[in-house]
Length: 210
Ligand SMILES: [Zn+2]
Image 1 (tube, rainbow, N blue to C red):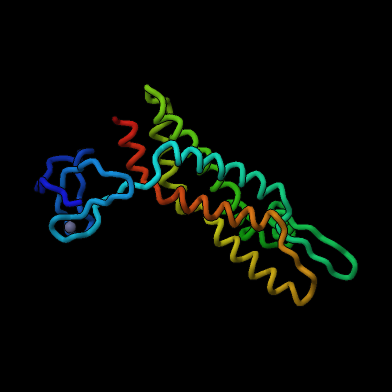
Image 2 (cartoon, helix red, strand yellow; image 1 turned 135 degrees about the vertical axis):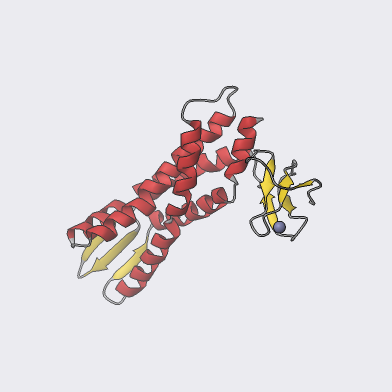
């Protein structure tokens, strides 16, 4: 979609204006259909887009991700068999064992990017999505939105998933390693979190201001 009214030199930032990141031209925001994008009239760069998902779809996705998050953490990730001994590894036991083996910072980063940040992100999504459905602005909405914008890049379940897969391949020469339900759970969680990240937070501000 082409934006119609190109406006120059705004006196202050206004919610109804969009500034092109590439050529600094200023445009008036228009309503978009789901999946549509607004392009800069001057240079053709994408100004902003509207997700294919609406608030209800996002809410369903968030609840599904929370359930998968609980299941992925409750189920073991791998089973190792070596010398007649079977060992099961859950996310938290793997993190604890990394801590015990003197790689505390690695354990802390893993616990943050795989457990704390995704959980906090999902909790904030749940809060802001329910908040935009309420008639009045609940306390903490603005703080939750800023928290969400800050947290999104830090939730990196996919990095952990690749690390686990590499470890499984490396260990497979020493022991019989089997992937368990928890690993598939984190795989599904990665897909759900990626789908959630396609949603522009701007749309929640708009839904809230409307
Ligand atoms: Zn432009």
